[in-house]
Image (tube, rainbow, N blue to C red):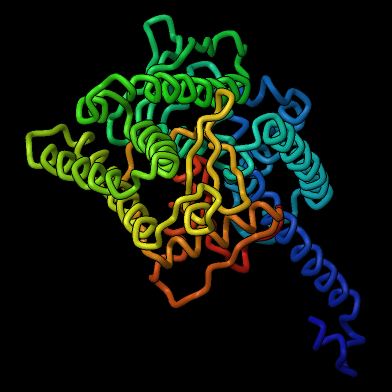
Length: 413
């Protein structure tokens, strides 16, 4: 139409030409607005199908119902005659689409503000996409329906154990390791606020693990080590064992018996290996394998201390190792000048990396970075264990570790 308008022979049908040009431009505008409206409506429709979301966002729900009514009305008219000229010829169609898009923008802004509030209340939601978060928030009536999404917030918790009265009494890992909680959580008291009782789960997880760790550290003094290993959750066994190893090494410096302690470490490993050869539950086998990895490294450290004739607890050869102390009802993990509070994040019953001299060097650098509130950046070819080493350090201090693959699509939001 625009090419024909540029012709010198257009005068005879100029009015008709202008009418067609205006009609086609309007048609293009309508289709652009239509596609925008359709995409947003398709995204929001399943969200506002949830009664829980509609109850929590009454203004946005009211606006969406209004848009939904207009959209369905226009689509019903279009379905009767699908010719493009007729379909786009509905009176005020462009204005209606513009109004719908304006309302949908407001709804999306309201939805983002709503999700931001939920994330500020329970910060672990920041690591979930909007779609995943909406799935969780749309299941407010039945706490059991949140179970499939738990792993996104708590890496080690696969399921929570509920009583018949819908009270939470414990947590289960992927390996079916059960850890009882120190108290009960009542999701019904949160009155539909999922983030409220998830906060309680986080607090109770930390409290419960601290209580169990305290009991296990005390029990170690009187129990036979092989029986003690089989009596506690895997994470607590590794942590408790390292606390006692640290204190026993320091005692051996004071007594001058480090060489004797080296023999004791080797005997302990032999007895643990003998346990592995017997019949075991799958979960217990994972715990023992991880414990042997930690114990072998611990023995190698003691061997190095004997060879270098270390006698002082402040000697660099000793303080550059990862050491665990039970101090004032909490565990402190130390390395050189860095002290990190053990996070008591439940990690499940997971295997651990074999510790090489390079792993130790990475730990020292990363722990030093933590002390200075800086970031760490292990460098090297693909598949050499940069990410795994960082994840293993997170396991060592029981902190949540979130892995992101950076891409162009990932921004600060």
